[in-house]
Length: 564
Ligand SMILES: [Zn+2]
Image 1 (cartoon, rainbow, N blue to C red):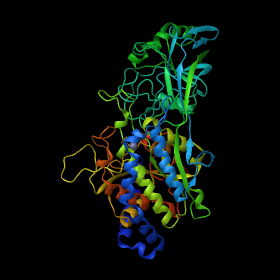
Image 2 (image 1 turned 45 degrees about the vertical axis):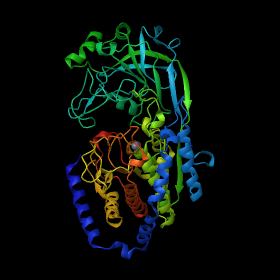
Image 3 (image 1 turned 30 degrees about the vertical axis):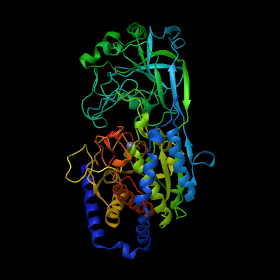
Image 4 (image 1 turned 90 degrees about the vertical axis):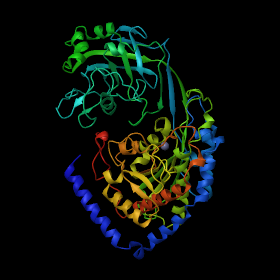
């Protein structure tokens, strides 16, 4: 972070807010006055009807269909949204003139009877000589091997194990830490810095970068794990299963990053035999915290990831509202809510084998219904200069599949801002005890603009004055918060340099539980947040200046270049 720049930005915003407060802008601006009137079309009765349908038992939590598991409930919910868009005359943006934008999710199971490998001409046997730690697609991968120490760039010390090496298309032999507890397990993409081994100290992106991120961005063929005792302790003859969006674009919650292979110690010693690198030194490096210099080992390794593959085709619901300005209509703002809910596999919750008890009302029938109501206001009010891409995405709860598809697809060229309503229907009742991070009825958490985009923040501040239906709490406007990055649908857009504005009520004890039921929703809050969200969206879309990411680049997004 550049503190000087941040201070300047806050100072100029304060001046701007002061001038808004003293000037009745709407009095001189009939378009804004008409937009404010259109916000009245965001109504409690419609929102109640929509959340009650979307979060009904019949829709079983709207789980995203994935390989081997269709989801009639998601299909019904998506058809409901599509019908509403059609009735309103919204242009479909999906495949073949529909509102449904399909993508592919692949699940591969390693065929342990066929998987094989070789160092040069010397064959390797799966299960004895190597195992596969992570992969997504089958096929043969062959390349030379580079040793890169612990694969960690220490940014402040200027330590770069990749200096002078071209890692594209190569195997990287790495003293990688074993993953720590939590979501970053061995089957997922994250090189979680909490496990045993070569764990760097400090903050990712500020003090160090991880091997996984570097390998992914640098186009490495795969990672070979140095067989330290902690990795060998995880040796397993279970067939590896890989599942992710395919192609597996993006970083946030991508279950797959690059293939990872664990060599047996004897194969590892054979690989290094006759090279300048000592196997004993590499194996001892973690405990000594001293890694031999990076080197091209000069030998070729081949792995055949023979696999059986199952695919599924989930989909987002997408529509389009063209902007009114002949030039600015080519700049798009996405208005998104994830339509899918978090539904565990049957039997994975002790004492509960009934997925249909999960109705995912606040998360996120609330935002899905709010956005539907916002479409009515957008149609009725003055058409903003920029175009609005309307998105109800799937796969958020399983790996941000739907938004990774959009943010890394061709539309990302046009997108200049991402607005998301994700959980906007819960409130902590007045005078009631604290329940998680839940916001009060008159307050909503907003993240994104204050850190990223001064003109989007100015439009948000203006919306808070002109659409004063609810107050903003900026406590999660913090680049260290997981609600900022990576855990929401905003993540993939941020990775593409697109600024974001997120509305979120905070999670409570019903979060991702069967008790997230529609009767607990604060409908008045969904109305209020949707009106504010509509106002901020409308102002950003109608502003002659496009939303610009002129704030800091958060350290968690160290590889990102804001869109110029
Ligand atoms: Zn959610």
